[in-house]
Length: 345
Image (cartoon, rainbow, N blue to C red; front, top):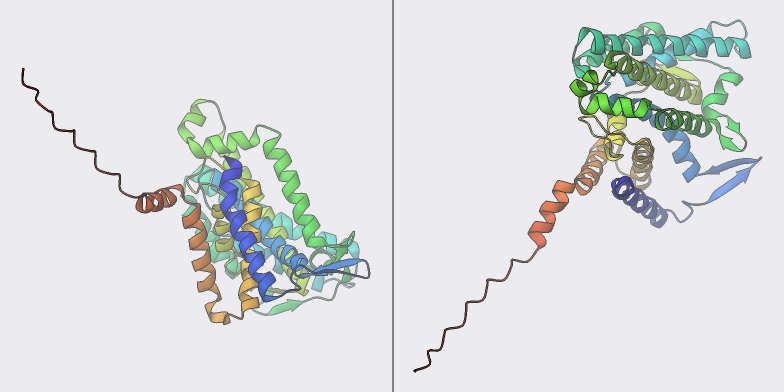
């Protein structure tokens, strides 16, 4: 059943890759320069790493029946705090100073996730409202930290996280793979994943069974905030700057789309980490395809929305069943019974 859910997003991803191959014959070409891998496929993985992280945290939140609209603002806050700290260092190439800036930014993102979890699990505010508050206020906080300007830094240790290479691969790919593997290990090799699904599937039944829903809800929102903060560090590190207005803009919508495409139910109770990674790669490949085809920038979001809608419709069992009913030829009318022949006695 799990493989069946992932079939349609995988098929859409393969179709997009083939379209890119037709438009650019060198699409699958991977080169080695100075011991580092380069190519379009590598770029898709590299630029898709922040979205994978944000979607990973969103997956667990959605699995509990909630949603987190504030991840884009948390991305901007993490980037702004880190760049503000590094720009204030006497030596921006200080490794200790850069790690300290990372720690401060991630700690603040953890607190923001804790606030979301507190509002949802303790106060009882609906997740969409609780996170909408931070979505608006967080963007303002990021602009306050940056002073409405773009903070630029010149730090070699800081550039490693978003633009560096480890073992020949871009560092963002390895970081995202590590976080995904650790998350999968924790939620699938322990009872944590089952408890999260039980809270999202039937909160009342899980409460009667003794599951502490408040702690779990708070935990998933904290994890989501940390993932968004780490994604913000990647984004700002890649460009060596922080933009409070545009960093992480609309990434919450891409993350929700990746979660839905991956087969996680928006009503909660079921999630798929592998499907989320596949959905995030599909969206990043779609963005690359849009630029390759040459679609005007003002039409990019419309094209992405149309393609994602088609994928979600094809993935929907109800939609496919309706199509099959329309294509199915009408059943032949039952044959009338043959007239009885009366035989005279």
